[in-house]
Length: 588
Image (cartoon, rainbow, N blue to C red):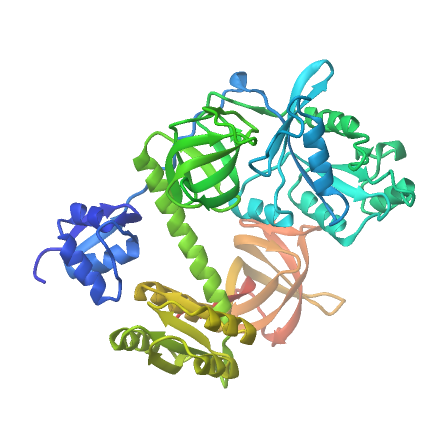
């Protein structure tokens, strides 16, 4: 087109309608262009920046990503912080009594008139404890075991203040006990030990403590710092002592939060409930969540239209350390995702879009790694075989052309078998035999085919947008490109004089012109562009002093071994370069 190129600023994710409003391109034209590239889009569908640029290129428009601001976070005022209840997670080896202990604590810590009458609506709850003549609250979160710690790591969320490690006195330390200890330490979560089942005849508390000491959990009675409490969850013995110990340990942490801030928290459960829609159980960590507040959670957002406590009782306000069930979200969020309260729905939707785009990138990254494992080395080339099934011949042709276009001298992506229609048993067999991956476009796989693929260990990936498939294939090709050894210069010395010492190692004197010269570095000696010798620095001297590092601007003596080249050719006015040899992916 002859029109002058325009430049328009857009967000990283937006709807087709919003792209139309910003660019003055009609919605019909946008949808038509996207359809031509195999992207089926509707007026309200979100598209990312790269997809929007496909449309813009057709109309000589250059798009620029807007620098979207992060959600406003209120400044913390220490004076406004107040004490919050501790959040405790009970973990341990299977059959050591974790569930029984949780139930025993819940049932013995409610008012007598409520005992046995509470139906727990969520897996987390709060108990009231009379501690030092003061009514206190402890929050117990029953997380899905070790996967919770992994989600904490992925989402940067800290779910628990303290892990209560349940160890059966009749069974001692088991593999899952050790795994729990490792996870807690990795994420810097303190551990309190509850030695359970002390009522059993075969219980051996001292042996259990010795086994825990082998894992560096040493009880206070033995001169260590780990609080250990002996309990019987079945007979409800030692529970008051356990609750008091939890408060004793967590009080030392000085746990505080500011109820006046906008709410923030983390998802600990989620599901789709008939009549309510997407539901999230959220542990409020700071601020207060009120009915009607607008929130963003991962790629989900919405106005909170229901808040329930752990008993299923409707409430209007949730405070720090309180687990609550909320409704009013656009989609079901994932475990470990962060909740943030924002000012308006526009801001909430923008955050959700950004998170969704990030999640899509992570998804493509993981799929690319999975596909790459199916590749094989044929001669000097890495080959990835595909079986392609599509809904129409046009889609099939587009995918085949895409695959052929991304292949290069180092990586070949080849269609082994293709066709229009559903994946068949023959397709599964062909993929299993040749270690190929099946790509399905715009179709749903029958359950029997999915099960057969699982049995045969065949990967099936389904797509509705060719552009997403193109992103994936390009990522796979980049991953499969061979690695090259590349030298990176980290320091430079101009040689002023050549010596040889009595240990028959080469010694030169010179001035460091750039970088830091260090003992142990790999070096090359160059005369102009020609490499004369190569070796390793064994000693550095500044004057008579032996040093480990010499910075730019100083003169020094360098002793080194010569592993390659001609040491007799080394002379003054040559350059000594310290180098690091790195592996980098060859570019496509």
